[in-house]
Image (cartoon, rainbow, N blue to C red):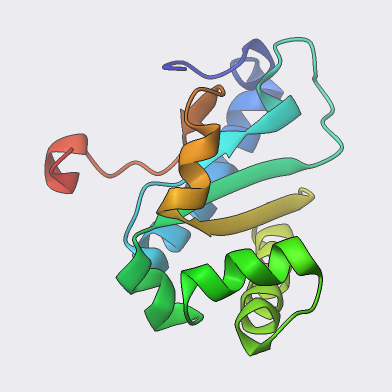
Length: 139
């Protein structure tokens, strides 16, 4: 998706988008990767999303630097027997989502995934929120 959904192009929506972009830029600074809006908030008719799904994907080395082994994270998710990797990730996602609420006054659901996990969602619609130029990303 290359343009914002219709509800983010209204006067009220533009203010929301401004707040989302400011928070996405902060997340971009922390994680060093593009930040995307995903999920039901992308529907033109969904003027009042229950939450705002923001996502990022980290390569395996960066994911390990933040949380631990990506394969262990995947296994923890499959089995439900969480290790310190999944708990560390979960604690950070809660922290970032709460910070997102404080910064935007919107119900933010932020999650960062290992790139190989995120690849399963590559064909779903998404809208880039951070404002770093693509040339600077090397993308």
